[in-house]
Image (tube, rainbow, N blue to C red; front, top):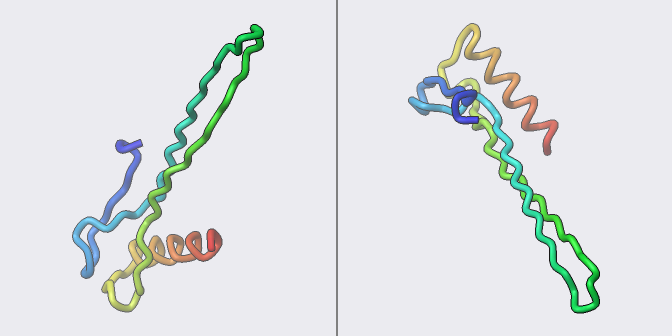
Length: 80
């Protein structure tokens, strides 16, 4: 996942995260009861790293970086 992570420079942050990342961890366990029955338990944990929301006016972004910031802000609004 780290190889797909994108960062970019803005006037507010030299390494601003420009991508969202999701890491899903699945833990499974099984046990055998005294009467010979097997039971299974599964847990799922999602860790999410969202690209940072920045005020476009404050970043000094232009062109593609400005368009990218708009897309990031829009996607964060959709998640909300």
